[in-house]
Image 1 (cartoon, rainbow, N blue to C red):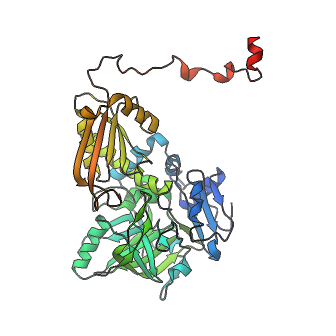
Image 2: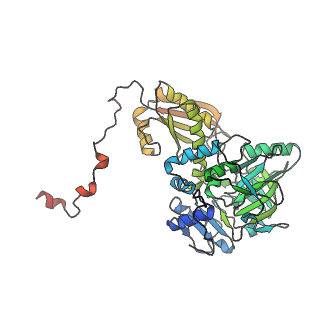
Image 3: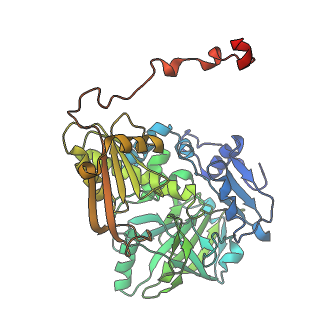
Length: 471
């Protein structure tokens, strides 16, 4: 791997916990899961075309379009990679995320940080400083798509971490799509007073911090503390140079700025996770005050609608939805947000059912757990919810539409779903479970005794032809 681009460090932190960003790149390279491209790949569309490697390898682009920087994409474009990056087994991933959200670790502040090795103040030109790509055909320009937006509640000082699409509007000006969540809540408080909201955009963090940014937790809980719990030790943070926001000390790049009050500028379209374009509209605006970064920083980008985009949204939601359902339905064993449902809209629930009608209640609980869920299916414990063929089989053989279908109209859905009316849409749920009083043999799955243990290699005669064995 290009040692002059990525410094060699220990693959894991000293305690053998989760990987840092550069350590994770070392790990991917050592296991043939990192493709290093030739210098000069185009920042407009050509770089994003490498998503064809999605889920196979991550991709590193040295000096794209002649820019002195380096871009990386596809860091966690496989569910198993995310578990590996956090230092846990795939089966333990959701439980690990749940535990981190329930038992966060307060961060530890430091005064010197790699994220501030190089400082840019005064006149700033973001596209000259950073290799910012343009991904999809109709994207309105270069976007920061993997930047963590960190904001502080102007009343309490508690932080929120999230990812928003950020369009480069000018040399030191960024358009940002704020959905009605925690950062927007903080902004409204500041705007009501005619004040700007101090924020930071953090680009290039370790996989644990990246995943923690997507945790669905109550306002007032700092996702950087969840990142510490995922890592197994407090996350080191440093205070920004121009405002009071604390950012990961080992981040690659930090853009410090202010969300301006009562200012809106055109933003979009942009290729989003449903694999359609988010529309153009007047959005909030960030005025950039400073940029800090490591020496030879790595710019992380997420290609809209790619596997990395979908999985980062799906895994934390699964943990939150599972916890919500299990509080009310102890028979719920697991949940899965399918990639075909863009990691947000289609949910499968595994239930050990004990009561008539229980699966329908679970469906209602699932819709209440997150408004993005549009279609949900409840299946029995013998169904592999991560296998779409198994789920479809359960629907085909255990579901009757006039008995087992739940439809809820005029409900809150995702505003990025183009089939809704600005987020107002319908939901349906399918009870694909076996009736609790069904005769044992009616729904008994066929199986060949000992099938899993038969050694086929021992039985196969590789040199035989069919004609020779019958003559």
